[in-house]
Length: 233
Image 1 (tube, rainbow, N blue to C red):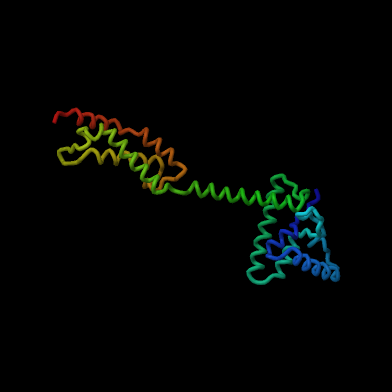
Image 2: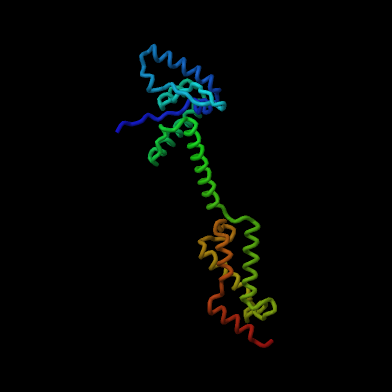
C-alpha cells in the first residue's frame, strides 16, 4: 500500500511562524527557485495548491511536508525556530494519530483539516479539565458542609442534645460524644482512603454526603449510648 505524504497548509504554517501568509509564500517561492536550480526533488518539500478565501475566491498556497517544515525551521533563528519546530512536530504527530484512528486527512481541504485539528485540541483541553476536576479536592465551603453534617449525624446518634449521652462522662471523666465523632471520621477516612476530610476529591463530594447520612455507630457503641440514655439522673 502506497504511503500518502502528510502535509500542512502554508496558511497554518504562516500562523505558526507568526508571518502573514503572503510573506511566507514569498519565502517559499524563493526556496522553490533555489531548489530547482539545485535539482532537488521539490515534492519532498513543497507542492503548489489553492484554497478559497473568505470571499470565495481561489488563492494560491503550498502544501508543506515534514521535510519542508524542517527546511523552514532551519531558516528561523532563536526561539522562533524552536517554537515552530515543536509546533510542526506536534502537528504531524496529530496527523499520524488521526490516520491510526481511520481518518484520511489527505481527502480534506486545508480548511477542514484545520477544523479537525481545532476540534482535537478542544478534546485535549477537555480531557485536561476532566483530569483536573478528578484530582481537585473539595473547597472550603464543601469542607464546612461536611463538618456540619457530621456534627448533625453524631448528635442524632447520641439521641439529641437533650439526651444524657450528649454530655455524659464515664468514671474516668471521658465523654462518649468525642468517641462517636472519632469513630465516624475514622470510618469516613477509611472508606475514602484519605487522611483528612479536606483531602476528599471534589468528584466524590455527593458520595461523601450519602456516606455520612447512612453512617451509624457500631453495635457496641449503640448499646452503650442506649444504656446511658436510659439511666436515671
